Image (cartoon, rainbow, N blue to C red; front, top):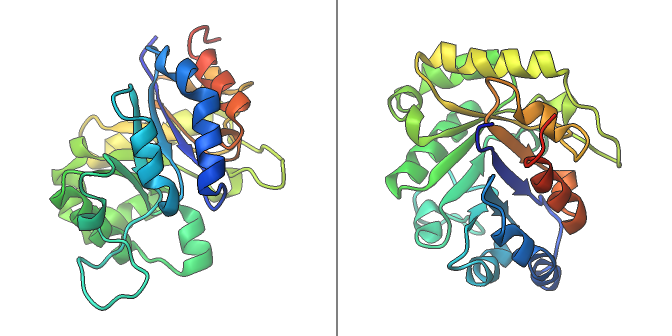
Length: 236
């Protein structure tokens, strides 16, 4: 089986203290994993401590967002330059950013450009194929730098919430993931993000066009996240 990329997106959960506890509870087990590329994306206040605790391990650290601005009088913004040297990855375009903060496709393209300027890998969320078309129309950089981007097919209606998991069908997720590469015109790394949990992770990760998963709710609990990682050893 291919080696999946498994990304933990903690969203707006976990204090610095809780971040330390999560890493302490998982670090030794995560270090033993050679069957998955693991990326942890904590909230901004926890990035430094997470990067320090995971230094010299096989676990990478990513941010959950970045500013569309390069620098300047934008109070509260975190720029790509600020993330340089701290993280190797950054999630952008998540549907929750659109829903709650009015983020646009143009905003996302600017974030792609800013991250690539500092060789930070964008984890670019795609809600549907129409949105991908919009990205491609607005930014040639998405095609030109596709091999430097991790794409995530992340249908908003499949995102877990309130304790409920509601993933897309395996067939639909696999088809849409494949369509992303077809539209771009080259082989790309494409993950699925939407209610992945220990029960369904092996099935999603074994699909031809799915190279791993962006894990939300299930990543916030150390035990559950480790179960997902361990499931990559014995896929269905």
